[in-house]
Amino acid sequence: MFDNLQDRLERSFKVLKGHGQITEINVAETTKEIRKALLDADVNFKIAKQFTNKVKEEALGRDVLNSISPGQLMIKITHEELTKLMGETQSELDIKGNPAIILMAGLQGSGKTTHSGKLANFLKNKKGKKPLLVACDVYRPAAINQLHVVGEQIGVEVFSNTEEKNPVKIAEAGIAHAKQNGFNVVIVDTAGRLAIDEQMMNEITAIKKAIQPNETLFVVDSMTGQDAVNTAKEFNDRLDYEGVILTKLDGDTRGGAALSIRSVVNKPIKFIGMGEKMDALDVFYPKRMSDRILGMGDVVSLVERAQEQFDEEQAKKLQKRIAKNQFDFNDFLDQLQQIKKMGNVKDLMGMLPGMGKALKDVEIEDDAFKHIEAIIQSMTPQERANPDMINGPRRKRIALGSGTDVQEVNRLIKQFDDTRKMMKFMSNKKNLMNMMGQMKNMPGMKM
Image 1 (cartoon, one colour):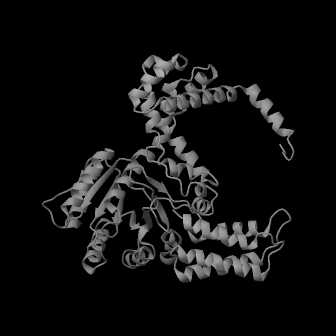
Image 2: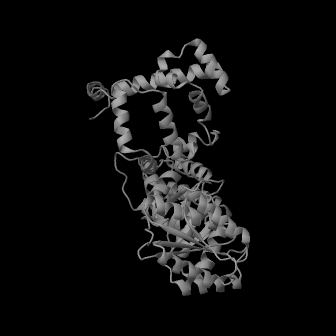
Image 3: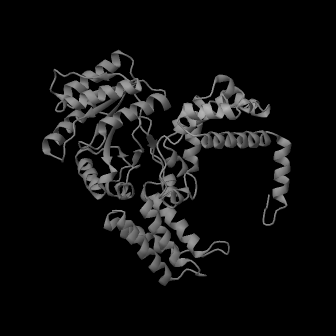
């Protein structure tokens, strides 16, 4: 996501590299390159022009501080304007009411049904809600079946009625069912088409009028680029929805939809779909997305994902085991499982500053830890609990059982030993204080 845009913007800023001051000429050159980068990312031409005019205006209106180079200032201004372009602040979902009602709209193939499930999963696990999914696509039996499969996956009930052909009546019956059975959020999945047509628009308008939802969310496939923005506008003209869910942002998308959609429809992006799994739905933060576009990473989101997966009590127990040098392969495997729950490894590493570009051409398997897991799972319970007992013959047996070779087993055990030593060292406060003292005396360090 945004790899090409990031590269093009980086080349744009190089125009100012080595310049001692900002001038109208070098700013014009830089903003020209920024505009090309945005157009190449499939950003609307008018928006790209307005954006670069604003960047130019801001750049020429500011003094360059002694500690900031012209290139750094241009990056700062571009970051600020990108954040404004995408909406500045995160937009909350309105889930007040008993039940709160969310209406999902979008074209067929945009990921509407899947993201109805992802949203239900998000509300259940992160907001403590009891959601009900309502299947209102009366034209595609497969859509109803798909929603039931999704509901089963995430442990959320699905209301459907294959005998009824009026989606308005199904939606109303679903809401009545929710009220009778203690559901506090209802997510209504509606029919989509391959293209916008009058019948679809009239139908979803009728559903909205009948159920009066707290939120109408437009689900759009970001892979369709500028077409996604045009579709979003047409839907908004008829539905006046409250927000957007952008799907497939983990794919080979140029990013134009994410950058343009807020300006065109003046409605916030509320969520982004970042993968196939049902927990791959992220709240959209404009500033964090700007950070990632400009190669600054997204450490805040990474920390939040870690906090969601790591249990505080478990962490305290692990800390005590590390301090007593009792960290073993069972603990190591537990930590791997927690990391896997956080999401795709390449996506996680891309959240670290500077890593996005470094990983651009690096292939990282979705299940990057499978060899490590296979090796650990081929150990006996005694070997996992007592890594020091794993001698040569045991290593050969473990390699054979895991489908790897002895060199891989040796490499893992060495990495484990190094990790255990470092964790033991870092758990000692005296060692940390000594290390901080040494860093304080290093040239250029101010602490």
